Amino acid sequence: MPKFTRRRLLAGAAPIVAAPVLAKMALDGNAEAAQRTLQGHVHDHPHMGHAAMVGAEVPAVGGPNDLDALLYPPAALPYEPGRVREYVLTATDVDLEVAPGVFFPAWVYNGTAPGPVIRATEGDILRVRFSNAGSHPHTIHFHGIHPTNMDGVFQIVEPGGNFTYEFEARPAGLHLYHCHSTPLKKHIHKGLYGAFIIDPKELRPPAKELVMVMNGFDTDADGGNNFYTVNGRSFYYARYPIRVKRSELVRIYLANLTEFDLINSLHLHADFFRYQPTGTGDNWEYTDTVMQCQGQRGVLEIEFAGTGLHMFHAHQSEFAELGWMGFFEVVDD
Ligand code: CU
Ligand code: CU
Figure 1 (spheres, rainbow, N blue to C red):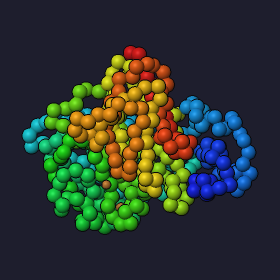
Figure 2: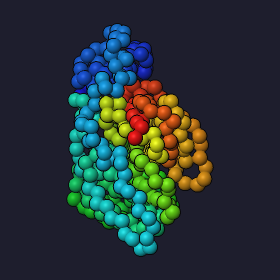
Figure 3: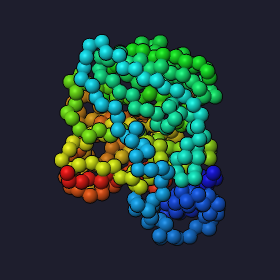
Figure 4: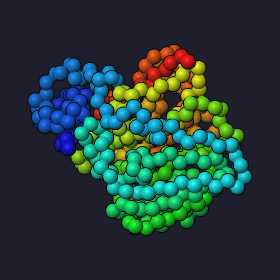
């Protein structure tokens, strides 16, 4: 496991230009070289530095469709009075490969960080059957409006235990769920979180829908992230661009579950999008960059003006160079 740390890097010895080089070395599994570089032998390596910004040359874990279950949410369902939407979530301890050869000892819901997308229509009864098969006490705390005895704060679920959360889904918007055991920061950064979509009773217009959960991984347990991703694997969408059609409306449910860093962001190249904070109200901003504090989220909509590879990344350059970068590949039908 790489022992270089971002904090030490920023603290002094190495100039910022070294960041992509270090990330690349770590991605190549060359942790020793990254460490040596950090300790002062910083040398300019233009090919490596630039490689981190070219999709096909960026190493990423997994195959082309591995993250589809997280990227593409379940379909929105038109409102039907009295309907129950049921999900089963199990917490476990797993080692996640967050970059090639870099493993993170994670705590997860249903095997991934972020966990599965939970979706309901406003007015549905949401029922989530939770089992704790992990080694620590956990809960599921949902954002939204619900009785306090369903809030996942007071009802700690011990290892081997279970709990069923049940409440009416409201209000419409993009929300979150995450563990609320203490120490809270630890239980969240370990990977226990996910996106929670509540559709309005009158559904949004049909669109190609995507879920992007921004997060980070502290692979050396020093209280700072070493890798940044969307949906859990660094540079994944640089290696495997997200393909969309120019003729279609694209809707992105974007949430920030990054721990340690207060702010994360998404910046889109070569176009602008509409942004609705929390996925509620009539307030849309027209922009190419949106910032979210920890726990913030919102809905983006765009019809791409042109075809080709559109880069997206955190506008914190450092996050981008440590994995939070990808592409939309916009095609004509
Ligand atoms: Cu927990
Ligand atoms: Cu929260």
